[in-house]
Image (cartoon, rainbow, N blue to C red; front, side, top):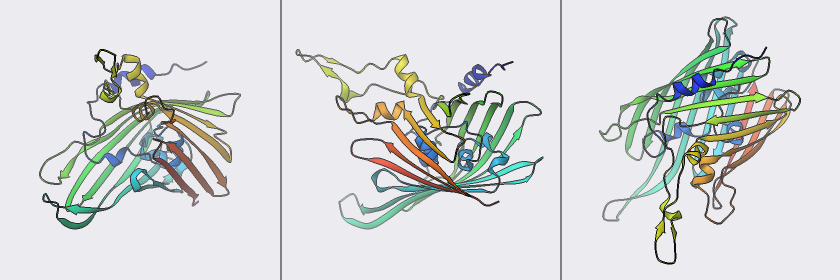
Length: 339
């Protein structure tokens, strides 16, 4: 008999979050894509419970014994010459105490030329940020629910300014092994700055996300759907550059309706041959595609695709993500089984 999915409960619970989104908080690097697999599936997947040790950086509830002894290192030559990467490792003490996880996020913004208010050169400067997380997950009794949490310590240096912060992530995941279905809810980046850059305290990029995924019974495919940033509604506003002007000079602003807002919260992904030694991944991020598209031009913003290859104790992953006609991103990852 099929079990009832507690999706409605997850969704209602997610509405208690408050509104924060890109550009409105500090430490934005915490929301960058954590691995090539994540990038290929649209940039944000929270339901994979398997060998992928990097998955736990985004949802600590996915920490499990299959991650034991797995070491992952990921790198991306991101937009504008920015370089960033992640690393993760998990260790199982014993089957009863489950598995402990450590993750690292790092970003380097490169070198900049500095000038004062009069335009005089003040020399070059750099900027970089990093976060270290410690996570653990536990099955809730004998149920199909798993609860996980992680603590993050965050450091940031931007020119002469420094900041230090701390945050926690919490995740809940439901697993139905009979039909290979997962549903997950995650609350991320709930925390504060401990020391500020220049005396002004800023909020962290708090986020609530809901994810669903399932492996099909007769087709080697696993689909994923993620609803991101559920703490903010609406997530989109009219773009002034897309206003239409008629022959009489009257302007009609872009209309952003309910359905458009729903889509901009949505990320779709699919993984072909998910349990094989070679798999293909593809995804589409509706918000990225809509916000970065050019009017009357097909530039395929929001699409991402990649693959993964397993060779003995090594797993190599690569993804190409489409952002704009001018700039895209490539993601590389290597996972090593140290057992």
